[in-house]
Image (tube, rainbow, N blue to C red; front, side, top):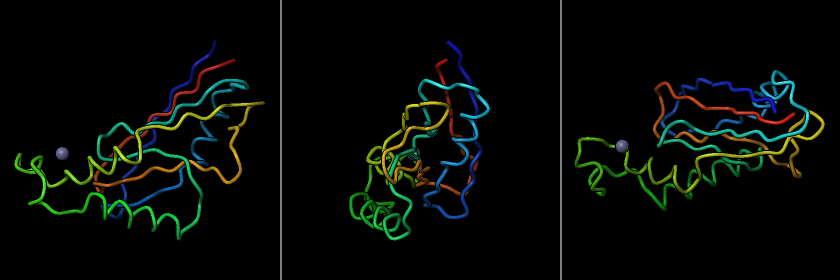
Length: 138
Ligand code: ZN
């Protein structure tokens, strides 16, 4: 079995932002040379997510609006922020949207269902973050 590891560096312009990283993951799969296997993609931070959904600008804004209702940015609201941080909302949003995506590789390509794309969801951005891509297989 072969394995291949790559890190993406991401620094968003906005504090909260959703970025389509499908083409970078496809590039990593090509670089790996693996034809049959699995591709794991995960955020290496507890205030950002990796998830699979549809590339549609209305939907991305719907996610952000929904998350803001569930876990609003409000420094006074959370016990975590008593430590001097202001990002409790981002920890909660990350947990809702998930840490990672795993996609099968078939005949050298990401084997998606209809409309599936891989996104990086940032909830405490404007600083350097990393995404891990790990490809395993034959
Ligand atoms: Zn924190």
